[in-house]
Amino acid sequence: MNWNCEQIEARLSDYLDGLMDAAEKRDYDLHVKSCAQCAPLVASVSHAVSTMHALEPVAIPPRLVYGILNQTLGPREKTKGVRGAFDLLGSLFTARFAYGVISVAATLVVVLAASGFSFRKPKLADLSPVNVYHNADRFAHIAYARSTKFVTDLRVVYEIQSRLSKDSDLPTDQEGTIPQPAPGKNPGSTDNDKPGSPKQQNRANGLRREVEVLAALMPAMNGNMAAQLMGRSIR
Amino acid sequence: MEQDAQLVQQCLQGDGSAWEELVRRHTRRIFNICYRFTGNGTDAEDLSQDVFLRVYKTLGSYRSAHGGFATWMTSVTRNLLIDHYRRTKRDRVTDSLEDAMPVVENKEAFGRRPDQLALLGELSSQVQTALTKLSPELREAVILRDLQQLEYNEIREVLDVPEGTVKSRINRGRIELARVLQQMGVRPS
Image 1 (tube, rainbow over the protein chains, first blue to last red):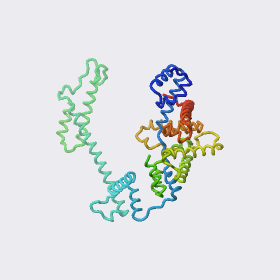
Image 2 (cartoon, rainbow over the protein chains, first blue to last red; image 1 turned 45 degrees about the vertical axis):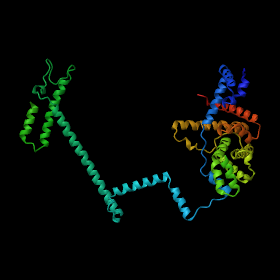
Image 3 (cartoon, one colour; image 1 turned 60 degrees about the vertical axis):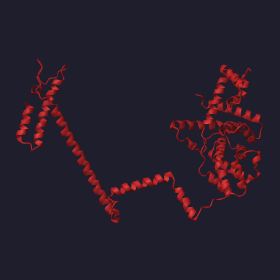
């Protein structure tokens, strides 16, 4: 069968809904593929239909069902007595309510722990505002002092570690510690070809200063040891 | 839908819980038809209440032998929508949706990515706008077929017109909808 454009348009829904037999569909496709007018029409209607099929149903307003029931059955009576209490309890056992209860309880535990309340030996006096304030103040100061001490300890350990690592980096060969000026160059002057030489000199000078500082900081170290170390670094 | 017929029988015997069950089973479908037809959440809510009120009053006239309860209810809905359309025709200067109450998309949309949700939301509002540009005859036919997924014979029952007319309206409605969507810049990718 040869289709014309009017027939294509008239049978478009049959085509999209799969209501054509195989022969009809083949001839329909044949026309659509070769027709510059029908091809975009079929594509756009097909797109519109598939778009509508993909749409989600809209959610009903929350009070609609109750509104309908009120209009038809009359205002709904509240359940009373034991059954009403069970209904109320049942409405409380929702996931959202449970999360709320858990978060409030966790917050209370944290606040009470911070205020110095003892869960093992609970006392009513611990909950008086003055005690809560004093305990919270005490805990805050202790926490601050501990954190300060921790930071100071970390700094001391870091300094000792860095000095020891610098010390172990030093070459044991004496000649290696004394930088020799390159022929034709003044000591301390930069050398683009060998930039490492002035840096070695600077490091040796720095090490000497550090040992002097260490000797001043550590009175337990007797003068001989300090002198030996200084002598070693100077040499 | 034998369960619906059973619930109707229970309702007629004065069982309030059976009516409540019927309301819960059909509210979403009826509200969606009303919302897609009017394009307005507040109107759709009022019309849904009117539908159930009329169904409640005329429940005794329903005969299960003549078709499904859902089809009968859809027919009642369609009649009320057409009444509403005629009643408000004079008030409508344009089919603008500017005053429409925002309606939340279904919670089944959870699990989709935010960009997919945004795209769906935008498409939904564009389709809604395009639907309100159609004549009520074409609009109701397209809503029942493509949004409510009814079969042709069910739509024939709801609209009370021959099946050939149903097919013709659906076809013209789809072509018109595609044309309006194209004018709005919604094109096949």
